[in-house]
Length: 467
Image 1 (cartoon, rainbow, N blue to C red):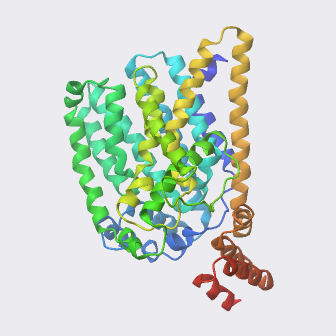
Image 2: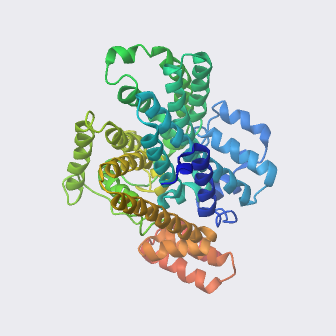
Image 3: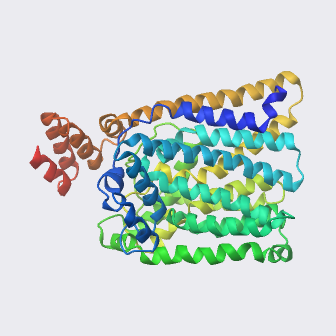
């Protein structure tokens, strides 16, 4: 590999340019699905004077994600409902997250005394895969997923600041203050930030304390700003009424949702390694009990993942940490909602994989670079590098192609109907896309298809009445 490729500035430039190319066909994609409710029809973002009340923990469905709505309000202030500005902000956050992941790996490797060459290669490969992976498209192109992007930004920056707070000889107070404000902002981004303190402890154990409880306790000054700032997350969660309102919604029974998540975890892993048949609105079969096939098999495999991660703690700590990152980051949406008794209507969304997937990507990149180091022979090593380069090219092309589906509501919901032909919501939304373009007869056909699948679908009844 050319020497200039080992330059950090060049790697960052390549990362940013490649990300821009992959998402270059998204800037004019319109609002979709929940974008309409959270942006186009959201009165909270139409006036900047109302933004402080969001951060104050005002009651209502927007209480737990004030930072997302504040950034949308800024977008609206500067560009109204032109989606281009919203997409630029989302892509900027995505690229920033790729850069943060790169530096997190580099700084961690440097702290552990690992060679700059191998650590830099792991960091570069991880960041590139994270930015161009097709499964990330929903998290970036679907504007309302900005909450996940923001939470990921403060997850990654929080880990970097924690390392700096603990390991730096100078400016520890400054880094601790940064960690405090990072935790505040993460708490205001999305509910899945609830697992940040857990990940912080795991990161400390794996890479700083090296599994020494006594050493970990010495870092209490670094944990203190996180603990104080995290009280704000609890405050926002208690003021959020959306989750409590969902208990009255006719959705999936909580424990049925819980059992289904064991299957969903394996679908997420499949999407990370084989990102095909991606779908905005999966028609995913739910599991009525834990003892049906393949749910029991998935459950045993899930337990096996935890056992494998713990078994690799000493031999392959980065791989172990990556798998634990994946499992822990999915806890809020996979299991916490069921424990809280909420009735959500969807068991799977690809944007929920945005942050958890980073752990698997780092584990894969570490294993790939380690394998390359064991390969003897220049020709074989070049073949391995070529395979990784080909993987990046395939993923980039697949992500660009997937982004093209988001160009209009017709193409997006047409794609959903092809992949979820038995889902009423897909036909209803495709019908409304036709109705908004005065394609009335086609709209009536799609609304009728929705009602044949779900006869009591009130929204489809209303839409067919309009048509």
